[in-house]
Length: 448
Image (tube, rainbow, N blue to C red; front, side):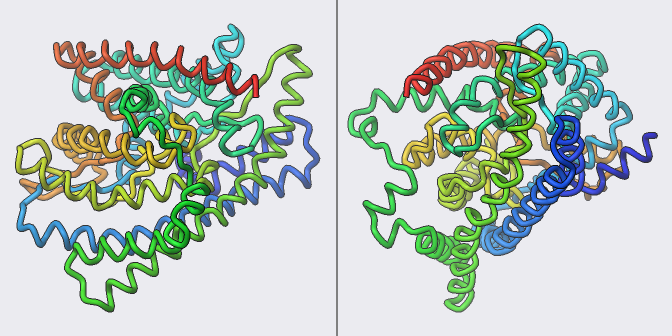
């Protein structure tokens, strides 16, 4: 059974999730033809998004590496991206226990009316495996590892309810919400966003991508912005003119293609979400239900990609400055396009691009510092599970640690460290504030 499940998961999200969605659609009484087309469209959307992401990464990553090399700094922790982290998680001996744990907690919370979200994003259960394996490695306690994963599952479901109306307002896709752990950073980013309300001038600016096009004219177009930022990154990397132009055109192309590919998510998800909502409402009168999904259904929002691209040179500069201060030892590489901070920034600001860039910039040092802190442990976990072998004196890590302040604080708090306990208490306080804040936003959206 384990071998079969590992084989299915090894097919990747573009295969695994469409199968889940087709099965869900059929269970929700969708017609077979409609369910299959929706599932296949979802797979095409995931595949297309991965193609464009890989294309943009291949354009930007070499320039970022060239910039780091030009500085002469010896950063020994390499950002290897999410794929090796997922491999480490799946190689953990107790990984498969997290499947029933997530499903059982979801069903209990649905039954107790603690959530209206049916989380079908079983692919990202690896994120719960990852936190469980990290906490177990740090504390030596398997029980504490599962406890940390359970806390993350509960918070993801609560947050899915909190953000559903905002997500529908932004994407115009009804009946779906995001259960990805990156959305937990909305609590931290929400406080930063609230702080901007008290800065004169800044608090008056509300500009999404469409408004930016109107105000900036040609410079607000995705194609032009992508070209200019791509050229800047390549220039900082010391590229010759030809390579600068090629890199600029590649980034420009990616920014134009993202919204096109993202339309496929709406085509795939809308009928499944509608069928699920209708079926669940027929069984549970008076309740609204949402389907919990991975983040790419948000990928059509240009604000995400503009923010992520603008952050690239900022990330590199901060990495270099923080390394001089002894606070960072990571080479931003595989996660240089940090959608993990851009997505919660989109949610918490309602798509205010100006604020998204500001609060994402403020949050970036947290990602670098936590990735540096976890590098030795992640490297040891990779060796222990036999996933990756790293040369002596070299470390691997992952900048996009998905709500890094939560993962760092709960891991170190459960290890009995004062700093971790204080950080976890701060996160809990921020989440309580954020809960009340989102309730106010949802009330305002209901009145529109």
